[in-house]
Length: 626
Image (cartoon, rainbow, N blue to C red):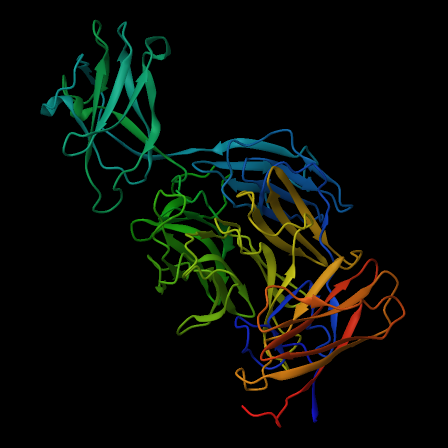
């Protein structure tokens, strides 16, 4: 009999997307292991620890660091939080009506700008740099924006009690901005009735109405009619024409200021638009690019150079770029000299049946975007630049783009649903990529209907240029629950500030922010599984003799347990664990197999074990007939 041995002493190839084939020195699955820091050894990564206690009561979607080192975060329910440099979390008493995954800090004004769904919120004296004043959250700091004015003055039009489509009873408008928030009309003398403004399209379809009660009407002034829901219009150059009617309830008419007597078409008016379009995906991601704050604004890109505290429409260009219909921004990042804006083709469905998109690139000066790339694999999420390469998630895969054709890094585990009789959707929020110790991290997914995908922080990269980039499952949140069994599992984002890593999450009705820093102990558990081994003959019977795992002297509280799985069995068979003081562990197998997987489970408390080799000894049984 001739025994053969396979000794695995290099681990930097990372996790493969296939159970039998991968790049050199790869494995099938690992969890919480660092196989890059020392490519000839594996250690357990530092553990995520809940730092926010019970302070955080919503899913944090954005976290920024101020000059003092203080962190400010927002959650998906409008909560605002701060973290001191000492690690103390607090929730601000003012809860915003809404947030949309974006936040930008302006040093010159010591102000944080937070896009809501339709308006912009602010935090003034955010870091106390100038006045030393209080950290103040301002709801709807600038909500609507002036769009246009028209008409003339000097005469009046008398309202009627019913809509009349005659030429002297309609006021035509051509909005430059959308959605239409309100219209102001000058009331000369009010009667005793309420007034109602009705907006029609060119086919006389009613798009919206607004009523101001008589008690709230003011003589000799502009009176604002705010629509109950912002009205989407086809605006800008080549946009559609709409018309306005004004009617009183029944008995008493009102006079409106006009340029021509008894002609409402010449009425003096002002129109206003919402600051933002309320998107189906709930995202207004913000990125600083050149001198601008750029904000994804549904099918537009809003661009603002923050000069005035409350910007005029000439400063805040909410339709600076226009993307194709049904597209909505999901995230943005700077790539080379361009701003990359990822957009998904979006339906009103929560599951978003389109699952396709594009990434648009803009140089900051051109009238429209310079070019775009198609993303037919799925909606592109969480664009992030690392080492001059643009990364994003789409269709359950991690992608990289550096010009030419995008490259798929890896199909993320358990995202292939063919033959599963299961329909799933995948969503990633904008801030789910970061870089730690030179390695790209991606928290995936933010939300899914799947109950098999592991919500985790995955990693991609290499120690240095001498090794290939590799993939792995590096961090899970402090709950220990990685799957969506409750249908409420979420990851809000991942952020790296200095030597600290933060991960936000939701698990059922609990929320939190975890930290990883130099004070962290290793994860309490870790796992490694090899690719399937078959000696090139999956049809032939071999005999597994034993499995030997070596390591540096195990520290107190650490164990290493060898395991194997024969012929794709449903579970692993484990041996006896090595304990503190041991330098190796052997599992005698002595079983026949055609295919086999080997691996180990590790446990740690305050110090990590260091795995140095995994050796599998087998008898290939060449003397036996096929």
